[in-house]
Amino acid sequence: MEASRRRSAYLSNIAVDPDFRRRGIARAATVFLLEEAKGCARIDLVTHPDNAAAIALYRSLGFEVESRKENYFGDGQPRVVMLRGVRTEIITSRLLLRPAAGADRMQLHRLEQDSEVMR
Image 1 (tube, rainbow, N blue to C red):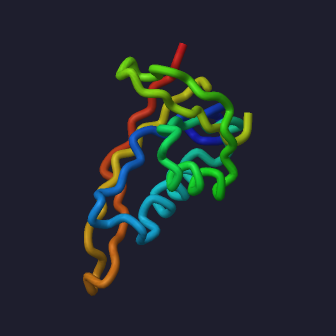
Image 2 (cartoon, rainbow, N blue to C red):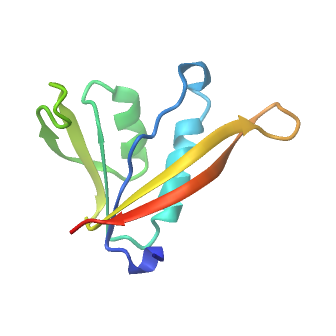
């Protein structure tokens, strides 16, 4: 479905291997996903409230904390729900990080995209 026809998106499982953190990869991946969700009135994501780096990144990209949910995934851990804009569609993009030509930088590649309309 084209982003312009979606009302909302949920970003999930944005993670960077610890050996590659602090290189702008999470920002690049999130910006890529936001571009894919362009036109959505509301974009949601969740993160652990102790993940200050993720919260700072998402705030810098226009997200605000909407709420805090205890035991959000049933794992006994709290999460903060962050939102950008004003949920009917989930977007899951699987990205692969691999060396770019020249191997002095990394590049994101989309492996596949699945969409599921929530009812």
